[in-house]
Image (tube, rainbow, N blue to C red):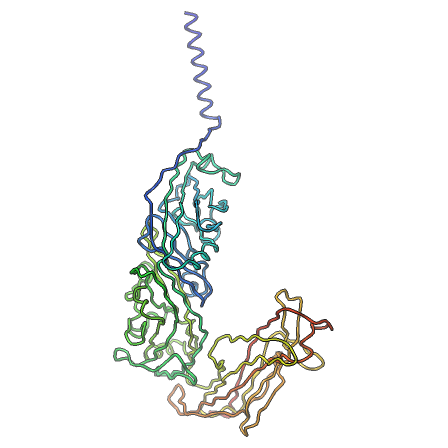
Length: 555
């Protein structure tokens, strides 16, 4: 009996020790095996946006459960369209991460770039403090402003890889996702879910993607002026190159080429992306009829820019797909007289078209995350002005921001910028003035434009002059510099044409040309500012040309 009691006591003590170990002792983890999922293949569409300076990529709805989609950054065009809170581009699985008892790892094997991820998929603050290395993102915990599916932000290097891929080429890689119980795993200390995660589940998917299309959006920088009456009748300004008065579906208005693009495809049919214009002014959006704004790929066949709003989301009724875009290289927009009339009625009679509308690409996904929305600005722009007293200045090549390059030397030509100045009113302006603003310094009583090296250490002065032909046929030259002083050009040779104001009253439009020249051949420009030392390399500067007009004794 004593021996038996002793045995029972030993068993009892061992049992107590075992319970203690379960409650308070550390749990050991061990490496786990991977569960391979079905291989996946699909196509990638890449958008190279040279207008806004960003990229967009999408694998479309056929990519499931893994998809790649989104912009390289949130641009001003996306913010203007109300999509400033969208995600940047992500590589996403269909695995939810909202269970706070788990922590997640996401990484790629054999990726075509060294660092494919920029971090966890997150909108702003309040997201997971995950660890990112050359292969993936580790220790992801769900937080506010974070994607609900296991996802990682696409790195800039990966976007550059997509950009340089030839259409029809492909790449393969393995996407790994792993989850483990949160209290026993610390990615910041170097632990990894697949090696040390308690209760870990590791899955891997072999991926192969082919580049199906490359859409290149071209920045032309052309700006056309449009003058509108109170009844909405538009008149293209002088030198207009992209707009014409046109009747579409029985409605009179203005048709303009707004976007220039190049599209390369591998020949496959693609309807995964939907393209349509987005009106940025909410009041105007609900004032106009569906056919007051239309868009086209050829300038003759048109679709209404109509939308249906569902759950705060604009869904297009009509759109073009990539297949539709294969046969064109331009996108046109038609704005009816009623469109302009309603603009005037709500106080939008003086506006740039890039503040009025842009374009949207919608890419649907099929792994439960909904859709990706991407906005881009137009290649060209319109300056829409009322027919009343006004003055404008445009570059003779209709570029919004003309640039010039040159060399310094005694025999080197100047950097010349040619402009067209136009005044409109019931009578000719009594006085017209012009000035140049930019980095400036006055040396020995003369104003100079200051150019700087990239590191801003070297500053070099350059003289600038304004010149125009006067009404008696002689050439007038004004030493302007960049100091913002007004210079009179009332005596320029003005060409007059008939014009009507916003109320329909007759008036006059006067136009004249003026040239800004940055001189490259003066000795002072061969030395650094405030020194006798010469300089070598590149210097640059930017500035603006302003005009103003005055009418006196006008009722």
